[in-house]
Length: 408
Image: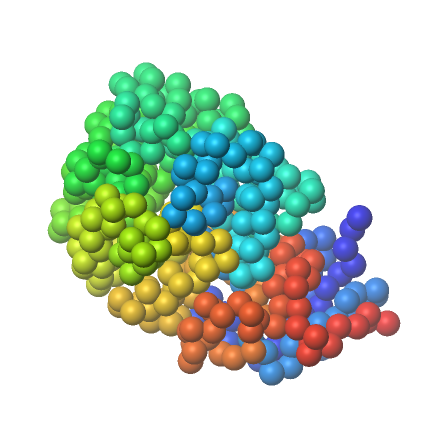
């Protein structure tokens, strides 16, 4: 069923280029897209009008690194191995709804067992369940015994096998690709300082993805793994824990984006064993946390492209709490305007998503706030206070205080 046109009237509209809010602009939406930005233009017949007087209109938020099929509970990995597939899918559907209701209208899912993220994306697109637009990587591709093996990644060795593994994800319907360039925190026995795929292996996977017009995110914590991934042509470095000057220089030279996911180690260290986090994961999180922050700050200072991502689904990193990453980015060198851009326009640029800005022709995805986030960035982490969330021109949730009426 086609939704009627939607007019968002009277609010202050975020201008991504000027990095400020502009008043006196109505946003007219039709068929899931922004049709025009207008002042006193006639409103479409039969339109639903949302009076945003006194409110602030942002593009829908974008999280470039989630695992939306995971709950974020400390025991989720063990549960995933024992839950029947329908149970896992029902949990994932609840995760998707929480994520959307927290204002995240687009996400990139970088790894799920059994390609569940691809199936989720299709179910949302078909209107079977409620959730954000998902760029789904299917399963990640890792070396034998590498990070992610056994629960969210297909093992491959050598350029030809990596190439085949990427093709398998594309055949399954992947709209993004993930490669593992180093060890990580959550795989027992794997050292996050250790590189994994060689540059040649990474390059083979990147070539296959780019041939199919898919962007590539590389899980890369170790310094040499980061450099291998950048030289191989990946679009984004995920985590980037141990960046050195050479790695940052390569990112600047090649336009590689950093998706830092500062939240993932932070919450595991903060929650600790009392919250049920495995001791090995706590210890490795302690090893990475301070260097992770230092690398992020160095990248920001150097002018590396930044996009927001949480690693949502890792222990204590729960769906619907995504915006805590924005507050951490604000604590570590990003201005409030840059934080907003990292979760909107810059994230959309990385994903090549038709979203992230309030411009004609882009997706009609919005978050309506009761206060100016440039003065109170913490409002983004309090979704219970949002006045409305809109995806594809449909009001997902709204405050009773907002006046909604047909245009007459």
